[in-house]
Amino acid sequence: MSGGTAQRTDRLESWERVSAAPLTVLSVVFLAVYAIPILNPDLSPGWRAACVATTIVVWLLFWADIIVRLWLATDRRRFLREHLFDLVVLTLPMLRPLRAVRLVMVVLTINRRTESWARGRLAAYVAATTALLVLVSALAVLDAERLAPDATITSFDDALWWSTVTITTVGYGDYYPVTATGRFVALGLMIGGIGLIGFVTGSLATWIVERVSAAADRPAAATSDDVAALRAEIAALRRRLDPDPAEQTAT
Image (tube, rainbow, N blue to C red; front, side, top):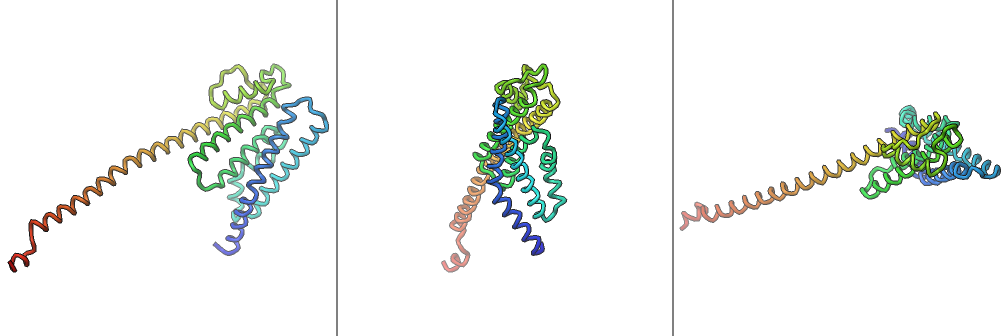
């Protein structure tokens, strides 16, 4: 690796470390200004305009982050391939559910930069991601369905219940989206639910295999030590029973 490439790699890693916390704060702000007009349909025009303006500012800051990381990347084609979802979401600002899903994507991206996770922290991360996905999907589907003809999801309680049963793949069918945008949200939520279930199942299976392997290795190690000790005792016994021939001659 040349000096210039190494320097750009170091600068990229430094930027990601420095920007991780501000991006998280911006994501929370983004979710708040996205949720307030949805949860309060009677919000005054002034506050609604402020929420829209804040959304635009945060959106531009997200763009600035990905442009900086692209500029610092040593392999820009690879960077574009690895962050294709980011680019698709950023280039489709008219799809309001995707703007909310941006928060989930940012959280996942930030946490993927961590090289290792403790078991407890990983469990907390999965729980937080699941709760966040449920909340964001509930807000998005309510925004899309509330004023639609023949809508079944018309309140946040309904939306939260629908989001919970959908991500768990239960799907009672008492609430369901009737608009194209609402069905798009449902599709993303179902895929996310299946992915989270697979992730948790895989992590649990890995943990069980590790515990079983560790338990199987411990007896093997103990048996090896016992065999070595037994060999040493046998060698000492042989030396006692078979004295040195030189000592026998001297006797």
